[in-house]
Image (tube, rainbow, N blue to C red; front, side, top):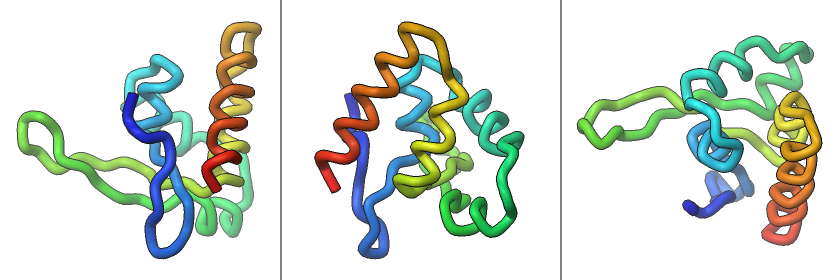
Amino acid sequence: MNQLVFIQNGKTVTDSFTVAKVFGKEHKRVMQDIRELECSEEFRQHNFVLSSYWSKQNKELPKVNMTRDGFTFFVMRYTGTEKTVGEYRVTKTYLKLI
């Protein structure tokens, strides 16, 4: 698995591409779910930042970098027994690394 978190501008973040891999989702679906989050514009601006990555086909594609708070808020939308256990493990791992 790719590294779950990384440092960007002195802050610990993860991104939508990594979250998609961890939760077994298509990246485009994760991006859609982020767009559909019900949160304040202020929270969104502070915790979700549009970025990009290069695909295997050498195309620049969008992704969203997210803070710990953004990540925690976002992954709570993926519920269910198996996903809840996964959320716990991912959040625990994330918190250990910051």
